[in-house]
Image (cartoon, rainbow, N blue to C red; front, side, top):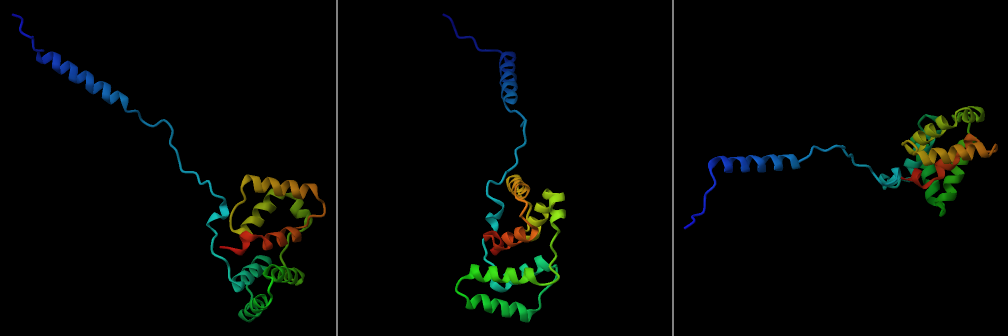
Length: 167
């Protein structure tokens, strides 16, 4: 009769070592470290609308680099409230502010001398963020293609944009 032969201790130890080596070889260290990349536009976090008084105060600070007194802020806020068309009221306020002495606007030649710096500064001033590459390229092409574009027009458009009305 043949009795089954049992493996010896060396055989079992060798198989266990081989299995441990194979299992440890299967776990790799990561080659590339991945970081989370946001896929939302930069303005996605701006979901709180500015009050009329906040809009006026921030607009004045952006154009004059100074504060507006509380009485004027209140009066202009009431004026916006009394007009049914808020966009029209904002256009009139921006126009009135632009016609006041003391507005800090770059010159046309300074804007055209370094368009990228102008665009970055304008985004930081009005939208409190840096432009992405697409926004910077679009504005550079827009300013270079049209000699009638002035810093006043660019500032006016930023003050009227939807993102500027939110924080």
